[in-house]
Figure 1: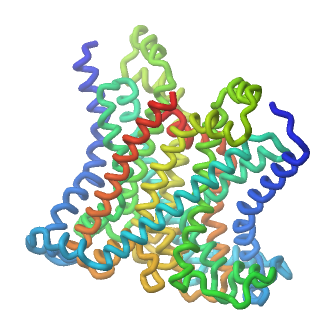
Figure 2: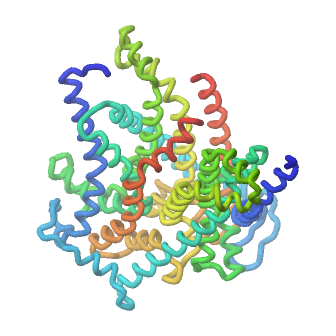
Figure 3: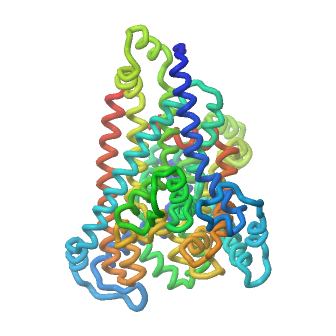
Length: 294
Length: 281
């Protein structure tokens, strides 16, 4: 069989997938670019060309700057916490103890819980009048009077981050655990013979094996965190006083609540650009870590 | 294995107990709320264990009496199954040939990489044109329209899984069948697909759960019982003026049940799927 025919046949088999992908991803993406240069409304006929007005207006607005700050804060803090807790959990699960298999099975629970259910659950826990957190903290004497954890700008973001971490640290733990189990036994044994303490053993013997996979986890989690919408929408809708309004929430409000499709599209593209730059930058970093680890 | 001191052993078991408590406490509390009498849930301090177990909310939500809270919940449950189910079937139909093609013809692999790279696009970047297009075709608030949109999430994912699966099936088996005179499609049907069935099943299960969890598009593109999915119904309950927190918790338990059961039963496949990208990459 000629290789041209093989390639043609392969393309033919790919064709249905590609057609659908162009319909539900490629074309909408291009149309978002077009819309971003217009003053189109969500409903009604399509708007006229306004050049880069939308971008200028959006990028200079304090709403955008605050949302960018909120998104970055959410992404950096929640991903950092997930990485640390995830690696610690993996190091624990790599030890031998009673119930290890059970604990590993339990770890899948937060991750399997639908995001909306997780958000709803934590919303109930943080409830200002009857929430479990208020009750528990008061009962053990850490809190004098009930607080509105999601209703105060000072605590809402932290409360969201805790809920997000609880759901997502298991993913990091699973990736780190798989990497730990790939560390050859004789290397750790040799480092013991050479007298390396636990910290040095982690830093110089185990970490090189973890670096590559952890970078991948970091990329995946950071991209997800920058796109965050569901958990925030269910728990705070961006409030209170817009303190948890991330970029995706802002785009939603602009395009769908205020029905300004044009400026919403320009904002959406800025978000896309940020995520793309992050992903590409990280991708280069991953390649370098993978290269140096081996 | 290094011999541990008693202290190290105590520390490790203590940490394990702490981790188990952190994982279990919120989930356990969700279940307790669902079976606590309403009065227990507004007590100060809270009753951490129900004064009497009350499973009636499960019956309430799963009842189909017209115009009851249950009817709305059951409708959204059915919608979720329909949307996730249709999108899963379509995604598998697209993914099997595409995954095989990329697996056997690496020179076109870049096209799959491109498809997978769309994962990083935020859904908000596609939402406005999709909304307008669905409106034009009368597919807003329709399970078909929503299922079509879900393909943007499910199809890249299943194709990638199928491609990895086909990579594990030696092409020599296919070549042997072809030398014996079988046509390409006969070979795929008789030789390759039966071998790939476990991967098809795993991919379909994961794809279904992805659709089951989806919230953003469902929130945008559905407006009432005709297409509203479970995630949107629960978010409505959580954000609405429902006075019985136990009912919200019950809806949460019911929505979480399928993915949690699948997660527990399939953990081996799930974890290897999750981590293969990480460890090999």
